[in-house]
Image 1: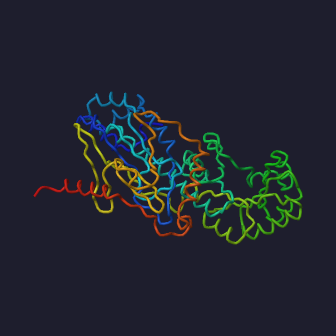
Image 2: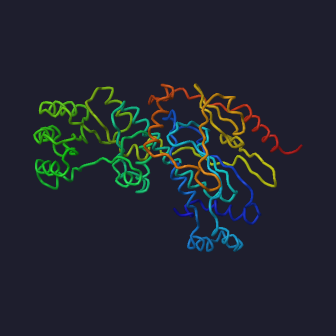
Image 3: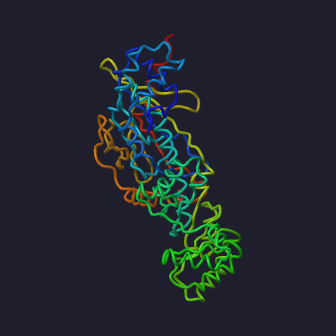
Length: 442
């Protein structure tokens, strides 16, 4: 990961902090989402593992520093700044919600406390990695809820916004509850189950559907999934039934999926292939999956591609990374933003999940006051990982349990009455105090 994977103004500010001798000041920044998209009742936090990897490996390479030296914006920057960059590592602290945690607007997903330059430079990468994976994990959770126990497989790599995004979409979808991914690299890197057998081109390459089916069955054995709609779905189903065992099932990728599935189910059952599964693909999303489930269509699993890998109905989140605290000259200064529609509250925070609401409080407040589970956990201390991160399977298990524990209305696809998130009185009082301090003297 390149240290230059950041916005230029992070670097110009870093140079300015260096020139103004502010490198010893300790800043606290919080990453959160200002508001939920219209089609989301909750989000699922994801991306922490990649954030940890980035922070622990943060380092400017010599060629990156030379590139910066040549930019017009740094013509007046003292050469000592570039020496400073060459030695820079992340030495601060990271606090975050565990991956898979349902999260709501204005709750901290991650908190960085570090020397000012370090905390500033990492803003761009942290926003992109947390928000992309949170976006996909949240979409995946909706698909999984819509399927009511039927497996959802992430199939979107070919429509993702880059090859790297396709890999991380597979990971994030698994965090959100998907059974696996079609992306082989995601499977290898993250130990995620992978799915896929053959495309329409396989059938076409043989010039004869029966020959293609026999060759596939010989190759894959009990993992065989026949794609039966290259030419005619029902004829393809009859041919798959003639192939007999071994077979996992068939895939339908076009037409009226529900009606085709009913006919295909009868054909397979009549041939004694009652255990064979019917797998559906073709531009699915949570709404279409829910329709199939409600209609009782005999579809056993779904592959969701484009709509999931790019979170098509909510492709961006209103994410922010704002300074909330600054330590300098032996004192602590709380910071906040009060511009219209962009207010932030001062001080590092904790989120308490109570039986019927969340309470966002200053980290120093007594936890017994709220009788809820504290969600924000320490992850990195002074640049070192506190403990090994959990396996992705453990993350998914926790995610599914926490989503199931949410109020039932939030688990529906329709927009529901928002979950109650309260700001503690102490936090509100701190904000008012900061606002008053910022008022010009009369």
